Amino acid sequence: MITNRLFLLGFRLIALLSFSIDVRGEERRIDDKSDFNERDEKLFPLFTVIQFANTVCAGSNGMNGTCLTANDCQSRNGSPGGTCAAGYGTCCIISLGCGGMSSSNNTYFTSSGTETGMCSVTICPCDSNVCQLRLEFESFMLAGPSTISTSAFTIIKGTGVAGIGGKSTAVSQKTLCLSDTFSITSPGGATGPTICGINTGQHMIMPMNSPSCNTLNMNLRGGPGSANWRIRAIQTECNSEVRAPDGCTKFFFGPVSHCLLTYNFDGGLHLGNQMENFCIRRERRMCSICYSTAMDMDFDLTTKIAAGTKLSGDSGQCCNYGKTNQNHKGYDCIILPGKVFMSKALQNVLKANEFCGRGKGIIGPNNSVCTNSMPFRINFRSDGFESTNNEASVNNKGFKIYAIQ
Image: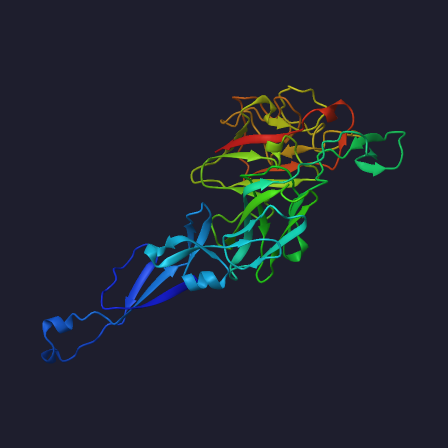
């Protein structure tokens, strides 16, 4: 644990503070007590040492910081956001703008309202035991994906082709992020999902391997002030209980219930070209998990299945282009790994674990599908186009699913 020490001159013994503050004094040893009276034997040490951990602290401005000495905070180009460690430390808020770099935990990437074009920051590991980066979108408002449903190109078997004819189908670029984008690169060239739209309250997980750094990229095509964001970068140690399993793009832990949303659900349209893995940590004494929606349109993914149909899992209609690979809709879907049941009692196994559609979607309100397959996760897939027929005029919102263990 990285620590800071303050050497304080004084004759008053400082009480031992239980929450990670360790006070140590250099004791004066007296061998010949005949030369000293009782009062002399109780002399306090001349120097005391205050030692406190560099833990997360709550700043007075609503942002989280790291508990540091005032000098250390200044050396990291941080701003004081209040005190910590019983007043001996400074809650240091580190916030980066375009071109910034930091190796401190709990660093913020914040917009100023004047950014245009490419805006990037670099986050480096704070120590060698960091394996993961969790980005929490405390505020995230970019231009949304394309809503244009007119034909942009044609496809056959999911692949774009020139011209129209035969089995080809006209499709649009609806759901693609064609204006503002956010992306992140990590060591080894790995990249996370490219996203846009409204994502306040959501998060993203990416690997982080010391000593390599991660780069957060905003590519803005709108004018100054058109985008707003405040992203908190949290570094997770390799042996942490809140480290996500490898391959997860989102990770939920702590409570036994969570709300899972596709990116830009609050913007009204799911994003194209997504390969997301929603992972939920199994909590103590929990052996299964159930998924449900609160409203009919909280599950809305492209399919040939009629709107409002209560789905029971369909591998023929979802997550592919049909048995003949000729369908132009149905690829956007979720997958629940393992067997899926229609009740908490794990009865009535469903015929498939792949879901798509709209209306009642995966399930209707007050109903749920459950699984005991571990680890708990939902895989979301979407391709890079939407059909230009009638289905393209509906929302394709994505999903808002409640997960309860």
